[in-house]
Image (cartoon, rainbow, N blue to C red; front, side, top):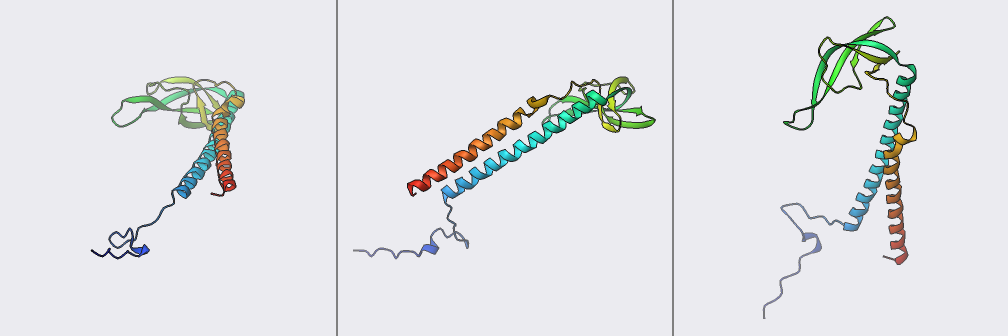
Amino acid sequence: MAADPPARPQEQRGYIRGGGGIGVDGRRLLRVVAVLAVCGMAALSIGLAVGAARDNSRRALQAHRGVPVPVTVTRCLGIGSGVGMSIEYWQCHGSYSLAGRSYEAVIGGNRSLLEHGQVVQAVAVPGRPDLLSVRRPPGPQGWTAYLAAIAVGAAAVLGAVALVWAWSSRRRRGA
């Protein structure tokens, strides 16, 4: 009867070319991934809320303090999406004068190609040359601008509650 091969010590199991194997606890890894996902959703929700607040502020400034100005198109850039795709829209820049000062900015509110040298009517906000648009936007959107942030934030809260519930029920069972 042949003798059984000697058992290998625990530290030699999983040995691969000079580096010992590592043990990964699948449950702990799942918990870490779940917590990171909930934190990511919370951060995304905050980012969406900040973006909505910034957009509402811009709209309010243009609606209440915007003044009409003639803008001369200086250049247009084609913006494409993906590799090898055609132009999706145009981003045109224009120069204008307001309160005795000259500015050059992106002409907002337009995605079509404008001719170089063409003069278009736009709305500009004194003191904010970055707020230039070919049309006066409606006022702020109010709470509806925050719908995406609310939805993602609610999903983050529900995820956090689900994690706490799962961990507490596991502890109650003694697992």
